[in-house]
Image 1 (tube, rainbow, N blue to C red):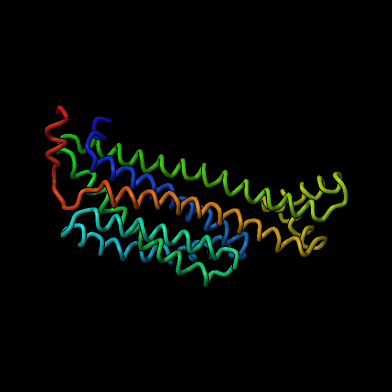
Image 2 (cartoon, rainbow, N blue to C red):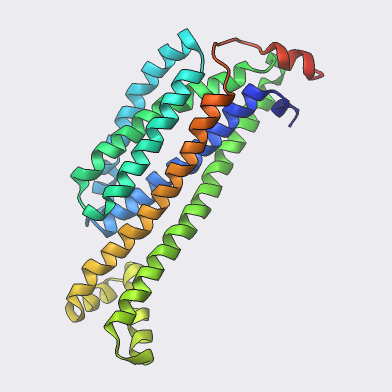
Amino acid sequence: MRLFQNRSFAADTLVLFCTQFALVGQVVFGAIYMQNVLGFSPFKAGLGMLPTVVPAVIMAQVAGRIFDRTGVKIPAAIGTALIFAGFFYQALFLTKESYAWLAPGMAILGAGAGFVMSPTNTDALSRVPGVLRGQASGLVQTFRQMGGTVGMAAMGALVSTLEQGKISAIIKGIGGGPGHEAILGGLVKEARDGQVGALSKVASTYPHLVQELQDAVSLGISGGYFLAGAVMLMGFFVALFFMVPGRQREDPETLTSLPL
C-alpha cells in the first residue's frame, strides 16, 4: 500500500478501477439486453459484442504509439472520455430497442477501452522500482478486479431496482385486486427468469405485457449505463488532473520515498 504514496501510480490504479467498474456492465448487461429485449440467441449476442471488441484491439495499437511518444495522460484522457461517451450514448438509445442504434455507442466505448487499458497498466508499473514491480502488478490487478466486482454489485442493484419498479407499476396498472396482482407478479418473475412456460403464458394471456416487460428491462439497463458513464467521468477527471504527462521508466519520487 506504500505505493499509493506516489500520485501517478495512485491515479493509474484509480483509472483502471473505474474502467473495470464500467466495462463489466457492457459485458453482462449488454448480453442480457440483446437476448431479453432484442431476442438474440446467446451465440448471436456474443457476436453482437464485436463492435466493442474490434475497436479495442485496433485502438490499443494506436494508444501504444501515443504512449511511447507522450506518456499516459493523453491516451488515458481520450480513452476515459470515449468510454463515458459510449455509455451515455447507449443509455439514451436503449429504449429504441434496435441493435443498429447501439452499435455506434459500443464502437466508441471499445475504442476508449483500447486507449485506456494497456497504457495505464504499463505506466503504473513504470512508476515503481524494478524490485517492486511484482507487488505493483498484483496491486493493480487486484484493484481492477475490485472495480469489476463493485461495478457488478452497484449496477446490478440499480438495474434490478429500476426494472422491478417499472414492472410493479405495470402490474398495478392491470389491476384485478391484490390476489390477481400477486399471481401475475409471480408469473412475470418466472418469465423474467427465462422459464419458457411462463413466457408463453404471458405472451398468450397478456400479449401487450411482453413489450412492456422489455421496456422495463431497457429502462433498468439504461440506468446502469448512466451509472457506468458517471464513474467513467470521474476517471476522466482523474486522468486529466492527476496523471503526469511524459513517460519515465522509474519514478524518482517512488525511488526516494519508499524503502526497498
